[in-house]
Amino acid sequence: TLFRSAAAMSDWTGGGSLPYRLVRIEEALPFEDVEACWKGRRDEWRDEVVGAAGSAVDLAGLLAELLCSLTAAAVSYLWRSRGAYDKLYGELYDLASGRRSDPVAATLRRLVAAVETAALPPADARERQLKVVQLPPAEAAEGAAVQVYFSDEERWYRGTVTAVNENKTFTVLFEDGDEDASVPLCDLYQELLEDGKPLELGLGDPGPDLAEGDRATALHLRRAWCAARVAAVRAGPLEGTTELLIKYEGWAAKWDEWVPRDSGRLRLYRPDELTLSALPDEVLLLLLSQLACRFPYPHGTRTRPHLAPQVLLLLLSQ
Image (cartoon, rainbow, N blue to C red):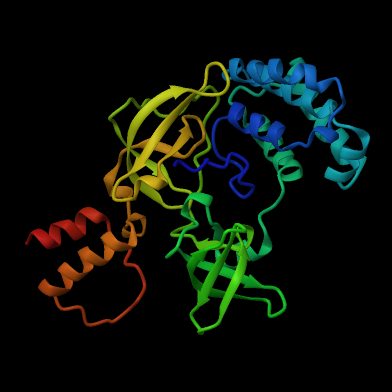
């Protein structure tokens, strides 16, 4: 079963094409935060955003329209002052009306980032502290390595899922020997492999030209750029968009996911950019064990070495 690539991952702001980012902002807004008339305009607006990919003027106008649809209560909640909202809306209006030139969309990108900061909820402070991400439902199974935060102690504990309960909670055995038999899915986290960020695409850039069977470098949900292959291509939920089924090399099929082409999470394959952090634990341990048999390793460490995979493979071939 494929787990859904979370388009609303709040701490992944700033990446992808401008249309992709505008649609994410709109999707993050609760229906009660926009005027009732927006329901009839929403689908058409989203299609127009995709169609305006190469025009900073049109995109600025569409974002201004979205801001104009917010209720007064939403504006008061999202912005510290009405003046900050009015200034942002005024700059968008100047771009949309042609009063201000923005040939490479630098100003528009700044304004989009400002709206993202206001409209997309920030990452949980606990997540930033330890660099963790919520465990995807497809990974929530017996044997999964997890982190659980205990607010009364204000600290994280490592553990392993030992059972999936009928009431949709999980039994977790912690490293200190304690066990919790009723941990909800929302409290299960996993450590990030790295701290990768999605790419910011230029005006009109639809993302890399990848076809079925092509190799690619993809940003995994655990924030590592990994070697991958495109297993299939399909039309996205909006007309003119494309999604690619990404299979991460060396990872189990449960990690396969559909990734929007313009999400900023895909690049043409460049093996020199990959590190061992992008390899699954079982593959890394196998390679390192083979390397240890051939070369002495005097510095005992549990830290993942940041070597390009092809360097390790070259050593193993000696």
